[in-house]
Length: 142
Image (tube, rainbow, N blue to C red; front, side, top):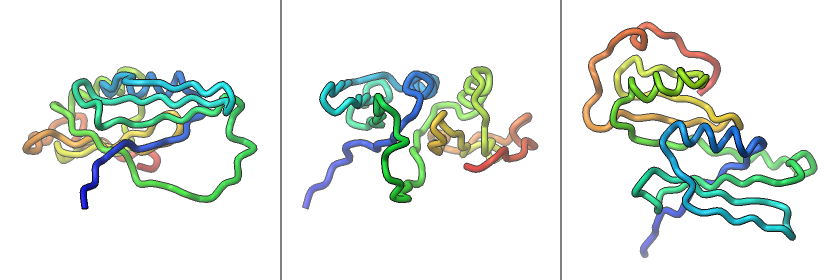
């Protein structure tokens, strides 16, 4: 049996803020579907050259307040990055909280404006621990 990754869907409340967050990570919009009848938009964003690895941002034009809560959750989105320290600094410089700093030179967690957990992993071997990351405490949940 063959199986292929398609996407990870997350429901978003502030489409512009969420798209900006994923753009800061380096993702680009690869396709969009605006459904007038259903009053929602699906925006797919993926790393450059990796259109088969998108996150699907589902945005309901009239908000989500009327939808029933079914307590469905998922763990996180994970992206491998070339330089975890540079990425975390870039995110911090743009107002993103680093919830779990890359103290080990290998792994960090941040959250999108819709509270979606995003894991960042250092490509290849872990970097040598360095400041300010090595002594930075966790902030919030990740």
